Length: 530
Image (cartoon, rainbow, N blue to C red; front, side, top):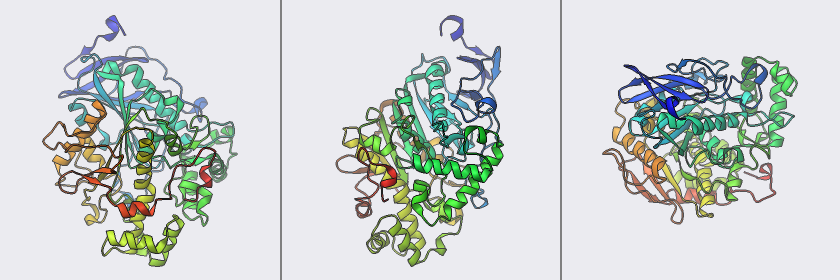
């Protein structure tokens, strides 16, 4: 934008910037200005329901951007998770919005690195506006931070008979297009965008790395506790749509589902999740077996041409810099609060290990050797952490190494004090350290500020340069961080001083040597035995 369109209007606490849809007014606090609830797409309801995102309607005058937008419709978390995971704000139709934090709106000539956060929540919960995702600390350290909402659950990830699929991923792409077209006005560099996210957000990012529609929209990616295996082939996706529609009392078509109120679709998906959790045939629901997820990205051959891990193994995304990793005790977040661990017997453990494709006796021995004194429930948690998170992340690093693409890998090992320490370094425990918010329930009092400083510095260094190396912003700077390939090098964080380890957990990794592998061209994900 040229001339007066690029001028900023500054009040004592307010800053106004132009966007492609109209001018917005943000609030400045200290050296950071926040613009909240900025629409990147039109409300996806009414005539636009279950359709790809469309641009927002332009406005005249100046729109205040002081309050986050509504969240997408969602069920919320189980009561057992209350107090551990933050609930999203009230849902509403105008849910496709972004939040932007910047230290220098319009003053840097668009030179600051941009970090765009995609939230997790099993593709059915969450919001970019959670307090945990406030980007002010990252912005104060010299980046433009953006968080976003996208459609969840049935609204975002059903496969419809006309081929409509992955609307939630298309929302994310629309948000990245908004960043490309507008972020220079906030001081950001549209050619230096890093997408970072956790869990479902990290799974989404891995998919985006392989999607033609997302090509060129980001240069770097950070995936926390999510990789490239979690998606549904068309057969399972159609089965999900048909069963969810039946539970909602509707025909499995756009017309039938549009007639169902959003809250009824949410309730139907929750019922479907309970059915999946109790299914006796794990193969019936693919990567959603067990009920931890219902909908997932759909390999429809168009928006998402191949299962992401398979596409990466074929060379997709090799031009994108990647930092990826997991927490040490991912699955404990799901077993401990629900009281499942004590109900796991040796017999149940052996059945689970066999169901994952492992030799039960050998696997039990390896996991028990790494976890002396562990209960069968503890060993199940360790194996499921590997199956769902650690091994998929390593497969991504291996696939990229075959094409000469470097990947930086970490393991977060700081144990949460929540529930008297029973959670360990569980799923989501690292998020507060990345954003610099050490007051959430999983961090508790006394969380090490230097660990947060080191991680935040490494993440920002990666966003700036593509390398999370030793040069940080704070006294907690990490040691030099080499890529994974060759010697299987992993940065261990939160367990004493940060340090690089060579092939940590090697015996556990070898258990999975033939499992969770990328599939060759022409194979189908439902053909894979694990």
